[in-house]
Length: 243
Image (cartoon, rainbow, N blue to C red; front, side):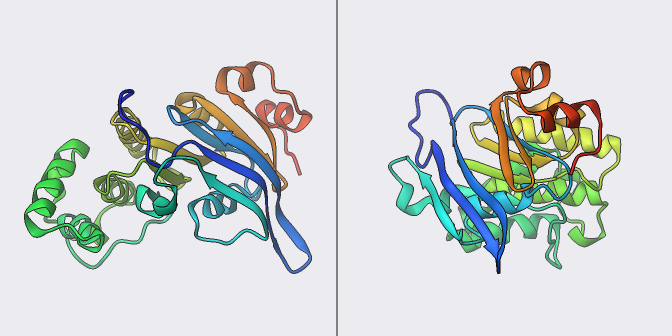
């Protein structure tokens, strides 16, 4: 969001957030605050609980205990101001243009506004040339760009991204990262998971380091990479296997 525009639901606070299945606690006592003007990368090894934490914050899962608190004036309607893109996006059996338009129709936008917004987002994401292609025949990287465009068209204040480049080649990864930066520059807060250290270095303003379902560190990216506080983070940055 532009600096002079008030936020609707941000900032975000997690207070003793936990999630378990049967007797197993998969997310344990997460307490952090996320500011409203940066890109937050949730970093950690595979199986650390990153994706699960994102789903809890986005509201797809109910926590076993603890709180997800949106502190903005529209907190009661927080779901309307968020969007999420998954590692393997679901494409509808229709064109790229229609995939984006359908999301806007579900949001309640009229035909004229849908048409204008879809044309704008296709241009801003470089997808205009693919607009009439069936979305399901696109490459994995192209589908991920469509999924981000579809989410961006909803004009979210917070965009959650779950390992958006996990299954893409280097060229597609670069295109997706450029798109993520464009979304951020347009005013959305990005909260994104990755296990890729190099990607985290490229994108992160701040790091939430997750291991074993716990947040072991949260702070500025520069500080995390130069002086990590936990032994697990130090090992992860060295490239050691941790468990």
